[in-house]
Length: 299
Ligand code: GH3
Ligand code: MG
Ligand code: MG
Ligand code: MG
Image (cartoon, rainbow, N blue to C red):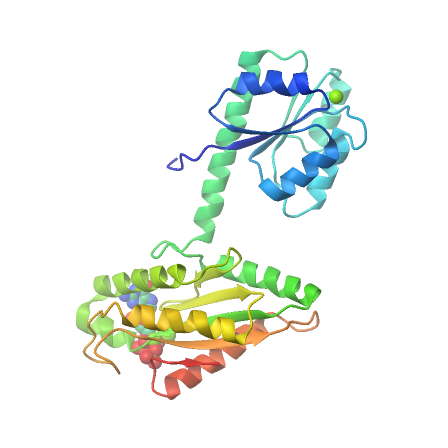
């Protein structure tokens, strides 16, 4: 696997000495976070998205089983791998822990070499899962999100904006006269144009929640949560000029260079309307931009 980024383990135990012992066993090949209670653990899981949780069962307040159950209830944390590390060493307890959804069950006192090996194996699985998830959501040619990921994120952001009553914007972009470009310069050069536009788009989206995706062949889309019409127009204009300023020669279009037309849609979603409404609206605006002469933005 390529990714060399250190993985993060959250150790949860009401006794600091247990945390220290485990941290020593793990060494510095991983980032370590810790929590002294179930409540704190749940908060850190939401905020920091660790790769693996080492979870004590018996703790005052929210115990390990409750932590696991609550993680499973929340889509954001449901898939986080949890290993119980506990003094409860009967087979009945072990079965209960694994049935509750823990990926492993380790009893105290721990054997450092065994614990280290088990954790390493689970981290390896997590790394591979992340790799596959990322692969299945990424467009192979340009590296931006693919259509599947776009649909997922749009749906999530649509529902979130409906809940909070905030504005959601999107851009639909389509390269101008791209068929002619391929015909004149070849598909390899055409692919390079798609990559360069993807880079321009990514460079011009600044907020962490913004998403750039390849919507179809030579069509890209951006989801801009909590962004009003003016904000969306600003992003669109930066992308339009950003591509044009690359001055990629194109003899057979409106300018002498490769250009893009962009449709902008902004709305406050309601729970009754489907998220496809914003796509349709952006599409209509894109059509207007094409009809108006291309290399422009309509909103
Ligand atoms: P318009 O200005 O109205 O958008 O015209 P257009 O020629 O760009 O639009 P049209 O939809 O007729 O053609 C889109 C072209 O995009 C057709 C296809 O050759 C090209 N295309 C789609 N996907 C890819 C791809 O992955 N690589 C390359 N090189 N070209 C692609
Ligand atoms: Mg305890
Ligand atoms: Mg098209
Ligand atoms: Mg086109």
